[in-house]
Length: 345
Ligand code: P6P
Image (tube, rainbow, N blue to C red; front, side, top):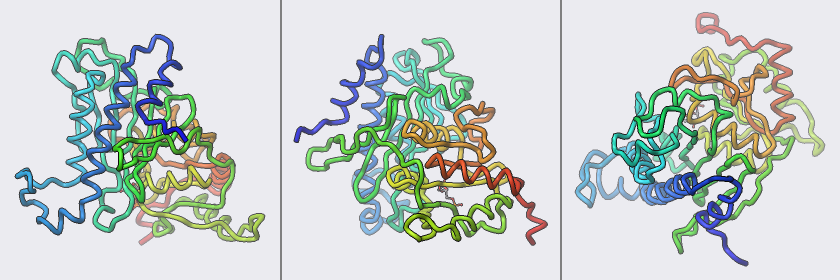
């Protein structure tokens, strides 16, 4: 069986983009390189802790960094080196990073990224991930990237995807022509096409939500959870609750098996917890390309939302289209207003 590496695939698919001169190809390739570098550190995180306390110098004499800070630095360095990216919005940084160097200033793309999402799960060996979202810049080439480049609607994305550092390391992405998954083969150090043309089932039996927040949920969410717990599915079993607390891991499982992920408005997070630019939008692009849906629970498509702030949050309902539709029916019928904390105490 012939193996198709990520780089071969990207170049093959470059033909899909008339007039493409390889810029997006180079950008995606550099994301793949950074993913391999971060993967190496993520995989030995536990070992490093044994070998040296966090905060001490590691064997290269570098100041021991938190892994998400490390991932942030590696992805930013690799994207800058690509010469195709003029600026970055990162979960790790309050403001955008606009590159000064001339080569980078001439880059046609900007990237929004969560370098290591779910990093609190690292020390308990739970899968974590990198999430990325790529846009064409709207500011003039040759100038520094500006905030307006980053406040574009999600439907303007030219590419988006994630890397999941789990039992194997995978990169899953879309450029608007379907979704493809690549598994890292450590023996050759290449991401190899393992999941071509991913489509998510229109229905599933998995619902993913942090039920620890139950009393803080809108009534419509509470009723949907009860529906999942009581509704018999063809197999005669109620739905299955699966929640890892790591978005990339929960999303990836539901993408492949079918399911719904919900992080609604809660009394604690009245605008939702997940960030629009580098969590909701990229995952929404992927799920829609795989045949699913992504909304705010009130029928508003995530990709149509106009961001006004770099790190703004959004309620997030995403997954199999029939399940998102059903959850929205409950939100409509029973209300989507989150209780306020005083009512709960
Ligand atoms: P909670 C991780 O911190 C994260 O940003 C996502 O990866 C994950 O889906 C969510 O938060 C989990 O949040 O409130 O359920 O712990």
